[in-house]
Image (tube, rainbow, N blue to C red; front, side, top):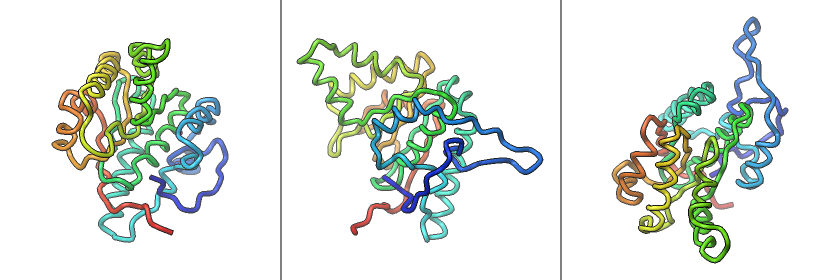
Length: 232
């Protein structure tokens, strides 16, 4: 979901979370974005998400909701400020909550920060992820080669691995667990968005083993507020 309505093009040295310094006497040295990494990310997620930043989040007019949103972004900024250390330690991020609450917007903002840190991120949409596995049955690729492509990256980002309705199939669950378990053992973080409301629903729809791999030492962010998506 896209949160910001009016977005201004930014200098390539502008950091994803909008923090440009820590005072006149102690400036924050911002590394230039790695355009190769960022262009690859944008080519996958699509132009709609290219200008996603945490600083262009549109906060709710409801004071209590806006407070929760700011607190969540502050937690995400804490992770992003220590991006290299968190990635090396294998700490993932899980964005969860109702549809339309900006989870993918924040995920892309986090991926942009990774590009500033020269950390490659492989992004996949959950639906096409499983379609790639199915397609491998009719090609020279194998299921294990598709899994290897997802295990290899420093960071794997998945936009909602759950189907719109129902649970993962046994095949989907087995394949996803094999990828996540391999990444978990290799200390490679996975960043995920998903439309479940709480841990109980997540375990029911995805399976407890998958959830255990995703949540261990990860930052869990509950995006629980009204949808940003409105008709024109």
